[in-house]
Image (cartoon, rainbow, N blue to C red; front, side, top):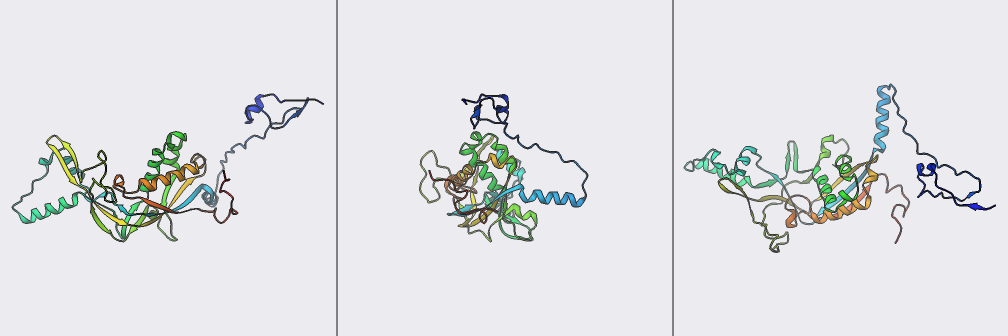
Length: 313
């Protein structure tokens, strides 16, 4: 019996047939089989006891997140970026060149002069976070998320992968790796060291290796703003730690987020971020790091060797 090529039907289009062609050759007079429809979402709205609600939450928690544990090590200095002095009123007046509105210091009084000098010294200092009752120097984990978002945009994935901007902002989170018994608030902080390794007066005419920057990329060691009464200057000084290692968790929502954030793109962003840097003074080459390890929770111990590694070209 002669065979004929299948024809395109509305059913084929509705069920995702490739350009209207079916995968099988049909006998004459035989009707094409419909592909199974995707399962429909069933809305479950029923009264539940406290135990039923908690069981439902636990069940969702078990599979809601895709989690990656990433370990990086700084190649050189990680520079602090939080201003030590946070007097917003004075900062605003100085930025507008209105220093005359700030209370004058009696330079004849040695105590007043010493206090003013101390304020001036610390005014341009950037430091790491200190936390009450928690010794050491701390970095908020949202700095890591900001690094991922920034480099995602730099590499063009924000426009190339439609909807990825919102997925990154609302569906990807960065935490410290939790320890048993930790208060949940601890997940928002990364310990970078016990104490600063030093305070650097940053020479913005040179890179992190001390080599002069080419013209057009040089910066002055004194930052300037201009107000009604003329330029206002501030010296840049930064606390730093050297060679520190950080481990953090990237949590990605599986539903509607994970499938829109390509694995290759995420790896590409981390590779670029390693050169772009973390922390302050990145344009001078500080904050660069090596990616030491990435572990996807629930995967490394379950997949057989070779599975998930892709095929050789």
